[in-house]
Length: 373
Ligand code: SF4
Image 1 (spheres, rainbow, N blue to C red):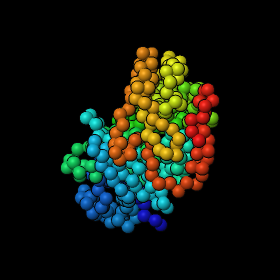
Image 2: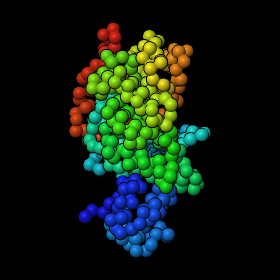
Image 3: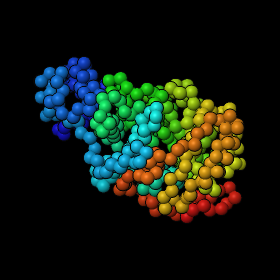
Image 4: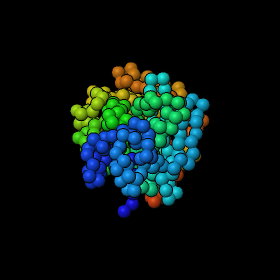
């Protein structure tokens, strides 16, 4: 039997695993703390575990990070890692330090099958879901390597956003145990308000997350109408805006915050006019308690799209703010290392031919003008 990577277990899973080895639950808690709080990977280090357990584990289990292909440090302190997940696939994680928090943006899939037009991951297509151990390994490695670099025993990462490569709600089975590791007081002890799942709008899974593990929710909206969103976020054809907003309202019953964050990537001449801002107000005000996060587009050649000029972004924001919708304009971080969160690009052995499909389809705005080809 293959040895098990213990990074793949939440505390319940580890307790069940220890039970199979004839060990009591408190042993699982000790082990879990060694792994996640102290960053230990060698059972011999775990001094308060019985020698007999350490010996049992040594033959059957391991704690193994993902191989690091590269690490880039930006002038503003942002760190980006590219992790090897095998068979020519690689995923990215990004750490963004700010005065009052340290946020890690984590990937959930090698590639993504949703195929959003403005997203370089979407253009690379989809290879496979990550396992729980591969999702947790990004946090485990980032947290403990940053502690070493900063020479501290204190927690460095205070927030996690599932906003790297992939649609997390299309890898639900692996996602939920990974979230539980993040939240567990014996693991990373992050509050539910500080762990965010970002989704393009997989409505049935939003409902399941609400029951299983309600953390903060961010939704990639990017358009005020179905006609435009169908083109920017193809999943909209399956779960149109009205259904998505209903799911957001249901989620709010159990959400740790009293609002949903809507992400809106500002695309020059596509979704950034004052009229479209008004349409967005009409869509959201009084319907869903929300914040809007306007994101500067991170251009890449295959998209055929351009970043909205700063003045247009600010004018768009003003319409929303005047209408009483809390709106932020995301700062670009790590521009020098290409680390825009939510628009990450690893390496994907595409099994979906997305790169061919997407280049052919133009984005058509209301007046019928094609914006890209
Ligand atoms: S924005 Fe998110 S859901 Fe859309 S293609 Fe990119 S990774 Fe997938």
